[in-house]
Image 1 (tube, rainbow, N blue to C red):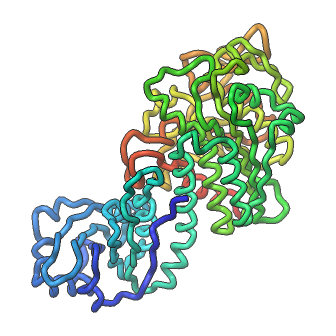
Image 2 (spheres, rainbow, N blue to C red; image 1 turned 45 degrees about the vertical axis):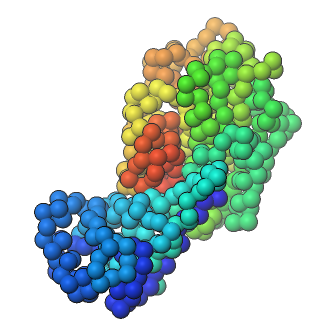
Image 3 (cartoon, rainbow, N blue to C red; image 1 turned 90 degrees about the horizontal axis):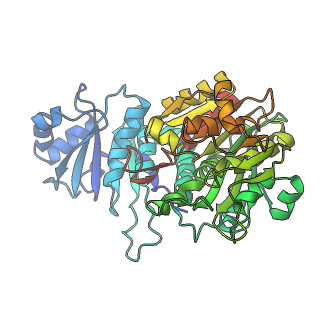
Length: 488
């Protein structure tokens, strides 16, 4: 998997500034006096730093942004990056500043002069997230990003503060890698194998194959994958970091490729359906993070891995299947497949683990993109406290989320005369009726939230903390939720 940039923290050494190669990034508070590092750079460059800080161009630089001095005289570096960040900057401003550095990194690395800035660890986190690359299939891949050294006043303290953030960055990278992988590589077998490999981190991992799923009665999930050569699977990942208490259950949709099945999608853009396992990718990234940072919580992650293909054996529009719950489902559109996968996994999670709460994630509907664009995920649920806590966690971590409605008025849209429920209510309120469908498979009294990440999992342009492509949305927000709400 892709690894975050190597970052180390060292005591500030003023003499090392002159000979540093690559990029030197100076954290600047416009309202404060010149720091020791700033004074040294100004002396080395014969006053060029002061001239830059007094310039109209610098006056326009906002918190978290950068002004470059290229090839400064008196120094060996390629550039001095003046990174604007007040001493009392917010966490998100600090990550933005780090991301601005990470975006510019090359194989020569960087020296970041953070000195005694209180947000040095958050700067390093933003840098790591934005420096992500995925290039295993390029014949001429760029050289690897060079190591980064943070010059700080208390390196051991900052390193300790940054350690859980480094674990979080690795979890985000794992999710991004999974979403980036093409479907001919990330088959259901391969996906399950990558999750099984996390046993070395301390996770308990169990893989349920098709005969076991059939025995459990997961015919809704199995119906989705019956037209594919890739066998359907459910992978269960357990992190036991607390006492014997009921776990939080995270459930992810893992459709490794979605053609739409017999209700086939248009050809244009279908190549992006490699990302339809994004919900499972987020669950996997969160579980990796919890294991790496040794979280004091009990969490179980369950992902349903299938491929939705047209074939002589594929399910047809009009087919009726019986779910693990026992409720029958009329499949009126085989492209509404993710909810059929989640239905059985949600029920299994509750039957087996009796969780404190259940959160599912899925690239479920195009309708949520129409509603919220690519800025926010839609949050649905039966428990306002849980929904609001997810929204609050996402907002605190700079990940957009918005609470969405559910209710009896939408229920009639998924009624059918032939079965207990049908798998789509049509175009009207499409994201809501999808959530309404999933609610049928949540037991009364179980707090539950459904997160539709179709608009945020694979963004059409770069974001502050990610290059164009998979964002890893949800790993950071859910880790925050677990720390705040589920760790003892």
